[in-house]
Image 1 (cartoon, rainbow over the protein chains, first blue to last red):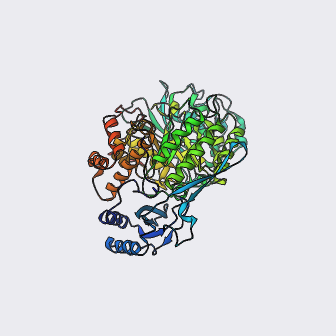
Image 2 (image 1 turned 180 degrees about the vertical axis):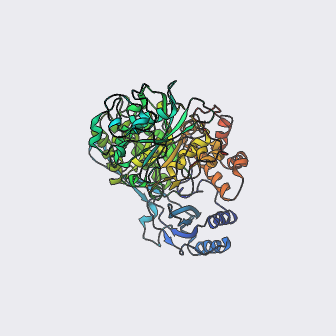
Image 3 (image 1 turned 90 degrees about the vertical axis):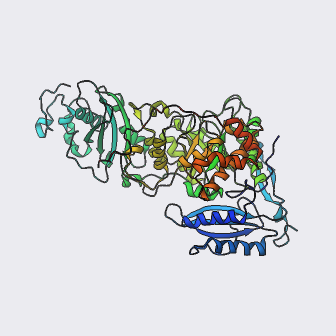
Amino acid sequence: MHENPRNMTQGQFSFLPPLTDDQIKAQIAYAIKMGFAVSVEYTDDPHPRNTYWEMWCQPMFDTKDPAAVMLEVNECRKVWGANHYIKVQAFDNARWRESVAMSFIVNRPKHEPGLGLARTEGPGRSIHYRVHSYATDKPRGERYK
Amino acid sequence: MATPTGAKKELKGADRYKAGVLEYKVMGYWQPDYVPKDTDVIALFRITPQPGVEADEAAAAVAGESSTATWTVVWTDRLTAADLYRAKAYRVDKVPNSPDQYFAYIAYDMDLFEPDSIANLTASIIGNVFGFKAVKALRLEDMRIPVAYLKTFQGPPTGVMVERERLDKYGRPLLGATTKPKLGLSGRNYGRVVYEALKGGLDFTKDDENINSQPFMHWRDRFLYCMEAVNRASAATAEVKGHYLNVTAGTVEQMYERAEFAKELGSVIIMIDLVLGYTAIQSISKWARKNDMILHLHRAGNSTYSRQKNHGMNFRVICKWMRMAGVDHIHAGTVVGKLEGDPLMVKGFYDTLLQPHTPVAPELGLFFKQEWASLGKCMPVASGGIHLGQMHQLLHYLGEDVILQFGGGTIGHPDGIQAGAEANRVALESMVQARNEGVDYLAKGPEILAKAAKSCKPLQHGLDTWKNISFNYESTDTPDFTPQVTPAR
C-alpha cells in the first residue's frame, strides 16, 4: 500500500517538492501585493502545537521588495538552516482577519526525526495521548546532532 | 375572502374592531407607505396566492398570520399597542418570469421576538403561516436581521480565524473526507479509514450525518478508535488533525454526554446534525464556546424544504440562522459536485456565512443589505461528489475559506486511502501555488494538475480515474434576477 512518505507537513506547500528560491520569491511577491506583512520564523521543535517559533525579524510591514524579504530568508538559513525548520509567514492586519494569511516551510533540518506518540491508559478503555517531538529529548542547541 | 364592510382602506377605531371578519389589508397588515425602521426584522416571502386572492391581500394575510392576527376580529387587540405588534406588509413585487408569484416584503418590530432565540424567531416567521389556505405556496427567501437583535446572539463558538489559528493552517482551503461506507463499519474498521485519510494529508475526517450509535458501532467505540487514529496521524505528520465526532443523539442529555467524552479524549471538534432542532443547536453552541470546541453542522434534512422554488425556505435563510445560532462549519454547496447548487446561489450562501456585511445583490439572491455586527465567520463546507480533477474550479468558485471534502474522492482512490488523501493535498497545494504566482489557474487547471502529477503518482492515478466525472444537471433553485437588474431599494 502507498504510504505518505513525509513526516512534517505543516504549512501551505509541504506536499510539493521543496520550493526553489524563485518560487519562494513569487509567493512573497503575492503576499506583498495582497498587503500582508511577511516574516521569517525558525524552530527545532516541530510539535504541531508549538505555536511560538523564534522570530528571525519583526513582520516586514513596510518592505515592498520581495528580494529584500528573500535576503532575510537566506540570512536566517545561513545561521539556522543546518538544523532548524524555517517558515515564511504573511500577516494580514485587515479588520475581520487580523491573523496569519500565509505560512509555508522554506527550510528543513538535514535530519528529521519526527514525532512519537505516547499513550497512557485510563479507565473505560480511554487513552490519553501525548504527541512528542523526538528532537526535544535533547536540550536546545544539542538537537539534530 | 368576504369582507362584511366592503372596506378598501385600512380601518381605524370602532369600525376596525367591530366583531366579524375583515380582509387582512384593512386590518392594518398592508401598509404600502410604511418605511421599515433600522431595528425591524424584515422578511421577504415568495407568495403564490390562491386564485382570486389579490397579491397585496395575500401579503397582508402572511404578515397577519405570522404576527398578531387570527381569522376574526378580537377586541382584546385594543388592550395592546396593536399597531406596533402587527407585522406590516409594505411592498409587493411581481417575480420576474413567474406570472402567479409575488415577492412580499414584511416588517416586524424587534419586540415581537425573544432575544437570543432562533426557536422563537422561527415560530413566528415560519410558524402557522406556511399552512395558511389563502396562499397556494409560500417560500421564505431572505431576511434582514437588525444589528440590535443580532447582538443578542453568540454566533459561531470559534469562527474561521480562531479555528485556523488553533489548527495552524493558513492560506489554503482545508481538506476533509467523510468516512465511507457511511453505515456498517465497526469502530475498529472505521478508525482505520480515519487514520489512513489523516496520515495521507487531510486535515479532517468526518462522521456522516446518520452515524450516531447503532448496533454495528456504538458511539463510545467510535470515539475511542477515531481518537487513536487522529493522534497517530498527528504524530506522523506534525500537524493538528481532527475528526468530526457526531454527538447527535435521541435526547440532549445524551448529546452532552457524548460531547463531554469527545472533550475528555482531546478532540478539537464535534459535530451535530441540523435535525437536532434550533434550541439544541444553540445549547451545544454555548457548550462548544465554553469548552474550546469547534462545532461542525451537517445540514441533514434541509433539502426537504429548501430545494423547491415555490414553497419552503431558501437555504440562505438557514445560513443566516445558523450563523446566529452559532456553528463553525456548515455544508453550503459545491457548485460542481453531485448535490443541488447554482453557482450564484452558492456564492450567496458563502457570502452570508463569511462576510462582515453583504450588500443587496439580487443576482445572488441577497435581497437586503445585512450588517453582521461582528458575529464570527462560519466556514462553509463543500461536500458531495467533488474530486481532485475539479480543484481549479473549486478554488475559483469557493475561495480559500472553505473545507473541501472528498469522501469517495479519497477513499475510492485505486492506490488506497493514503494515496487518495495525498493526491488531494498535492492537487490543492499546486493550485494555490499557481494562483499566488498569478497563473490563470481556472483556464490552466488541468495543465497545473498534470504537471504536479509528474512528481506524485497518486495524483496521476486519481486524475486517470476521475478526470471525466462531472455532474451537469440543471439546478432547481436558481436566481430570479439576472445581474443586469438594478436592485430596487
